[in-house]
View (cartoon, rainbow over the protein chains, first blue to last red):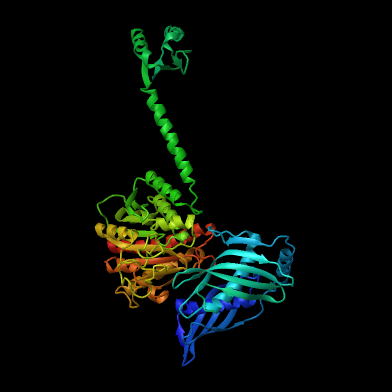
Length: 220
Length: 395
């Protein structure tokens, strides 16, 4: 059977962070910002010879859609004793997310029409500022980080994107946009803030795909 | 120079004064000229001429009084007043809604201490790199009254905490005498506020690495620098939840109190001997926690601390709806040894709480400056709730 967990405490919150990271990777984009408003309910099931499975009920906000509430359920399975395999995650979103087609197209065209490849650093800056024109780049960093967080979390870690240290656009001959990020991820249990290199492709229809990621001493 | 006010009674006396006016060698400066008997005559007299003018007036039976004994004094004081006012202007325009450098913060501490008679800036020690550890003492009198301790910025990258501490200091100082709660608190208790508990780390976050957390002490035998000052207290020191690797951000250090930033506070509190509450500010996560962190068992005062914590979280939420989770450190986040509130609790300071301020991860350490004052305001409500309870129980 599954054990009920206090949703406000970290063990449940760690699993929720993985689920949200995964969801951001799948459904996020330069025009969509998904925030966790509340973890409503969390249960944990210990499955012999397999691992620990968390059942979560989450309330998210689609911030750029007037903070509209989005309900989700998620399952996060941490594999037994395994430091090298990513948790299995499934997320079900109740209802539809607002279309970001227009914002995506605008962003896509803007970047494609740049003469020089986009380069930026320190997003946000030390004081928490983000220039408005870099907000989509920031959101895309959250998408890319979502992948890294999903792939590199264990039951005892809680990863957050602390800052985009550096981002460089790489022009491509095909239709994808490519951004090579150096992101700082904050791991809340060890308190380490560590740099990860993530190279991500993005296209308005195809969405985001991480092509490469590399972290300090990363096994994956 | 003196300024005399001369009261003339008739035209005759007016004529005498006009005669005096014509004597250029006296260098008299009439501020109000002799014209009609009903009107006073004010005249500035250079020091050298004072005796002879007075002698003349007396010989003529003309009444006078000394308006200004020593003009230079008056001018000096006015200059000083203006300078102080200008400084007050400059510093009362200290922007609490912005992030500041260590120097700017220290300047504001000086300003608060000079502006309020019951606020004193004291130094309780020095950091590893020899920066002063400044504490603001709020005391309206008495001798070693029961006291409350509040610190911020022990982890240097948690910028909203130092910034909030400044706002809170100004709030308490400004509202003493008008706010009933603050007034009754400071009438019976003292408050000690350390706004920058880790100044070396703080400077480093400005000059080199915004994400620096630890102190900046050199560790023998390692290329890495710094100790996690909130794993360095003598409470379950070296136990789970702290690292023994110098390069780790939660490195506990070679021994308990090895960090001078920690030792200075420990010594100060022990020497004082009458602290009733120990409150510390961190960010981020929006949590309000009480002991223990080094072990996962409940403290003896669990019921009271849980109840008080919830009341404080409720106060926080009342302002902007910001929710803080309440619980022991171990249950709420994780087991973490060598923490400050565990030490204070085990040393007899019952009301030991650690706050984790805004936000929950969206900006994390890089909280936009426009959230400083809202964060400070809501946090202050929580602190006040706790302090009111402490006052009730301690006096």
